[in-house]
Length: 380
Ligand code: UDP
Image (cartoon, rainbow, N blue to C red; front, side):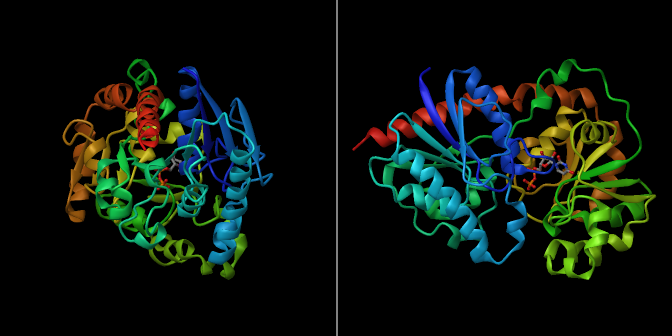
């Protein structure tokens, strides 16, 4: 296949990300499979990205993640500088067949404004946009700009301007799903894990109270705002409380963290993350937001760990209730489900992941969408 895709991963973190990293994880999972299918990939990212690609360029040497904590106009300044770099590239060459854009509204609007000579754009939505219609406004760019969701539920909640440009959804994937059905069975401990950013939407406070009520040990893994290690957060002092996730952690979660029944281990990566998740009796998602894509959900299944969750956002699409996990609309029921999850078969989870959530499945689906987007752009 002779197709050149400019993959815009944005300026926030390197690809693959050093630990936590939603969009960057998706790009790192997708790109090697696209290249295996013969797609040429030009990566727009930061200089420290190490993902093998055919070509890459950057505006910033390193990830600008810390800038996300600054005032909104400075955040926009970073993403606009990055986008200006993308636009410069596109003006200087005619071999890019399509832009696969993962950056927020600023990026999409800029690309759309480039005029009819710019390549068509597929923009992947990564966020729950129901409460943020202002982020996109009216989508410019006519037939050249299309969007896809990471779940049907996410797309259904997106503002109308986006839904009108939608070409479908593609579930998230994980390299852990490759041959997951053939890997040795994990040895299970007694603990549960919540893997994700510490944030009210992810519900770590609900999980911590649940651990107290059920006596099932809980490990919380993930960053609190920009702080990846408990020692970094402690060293940051009171000023760190300006960050809403830090306030949430101190006010709602930390009172339950006793280092024994409930532990916060900070960001985990690589083998440490996989062992923690594979050894858990269940992966807990006591969500308070409509989870748009749930990478951590498919990772849990791939590692043979059943999912116990509130049935919000993409969860019912990813988890087969009664087979690969247990879902409920009622937060109070999560405790019983946690105890019942022990009866679920890890092999069912791994089989499901190997069939549905591999990078190859995701890449094939994106290649089909690229064709749809290019065909739409050709229609006058
Ligand atoms: N993650 C990680 N270490 C952590 C916490 C999270 O590697 O301590 C990874 C996690 O495995 C997943 C991603 O960060 O790949 C989070 O993506 P997800 O879609 O679950 O949540 P988001 O933060 O994008 O809403």
